[in-house]
Image 1 (tube, rainbow, N blue to C red):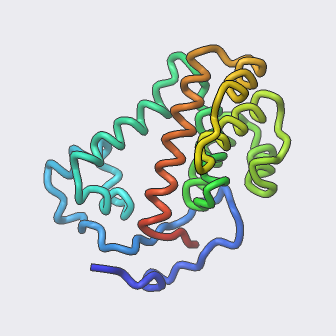
Image 2: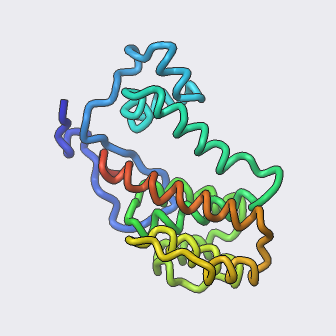
Image 3: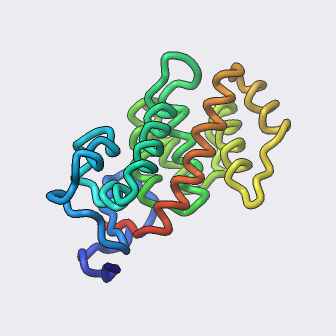
Length: 197
């Protein structure tokens, strides 16, 4: 069933924001009371059953399970490699470039929380991916932009910039994973619904 985009009464956000937004799917997600154990297992975290995006993706539980495990590993497996703030910044930069206001709101709030650099994160949202931040974050944003370009133009220049900014080999790999995953995640979310307040 296709939903009427205005049926939830959501108003599109006027700008990129770190505030919490709602999201309205264009297709009917599974109802919470229709989720089976297979669906709940695919959500990985049962609390996601409240979220219409994840209930929509639960229509294909095998794919959702792998998507969620990949997402969790990229963002929460921080024993080595990039710190969480940098991973969230990568997701924010991809979302800003791709125009995914909802994803940008979620991940910019996490980037601000973990980095304690709310003003810098807001500058990225307000001015776009060309906003000057600092050498490390500029290199990280530049790499994500190159990964997200169509066609991608990521190459040795971006790797060299990341290394020159002080990232080690595992941190470079994490930057590539976070940027690439979120470029894909933005495309998926943008094709399935819209944000609102």
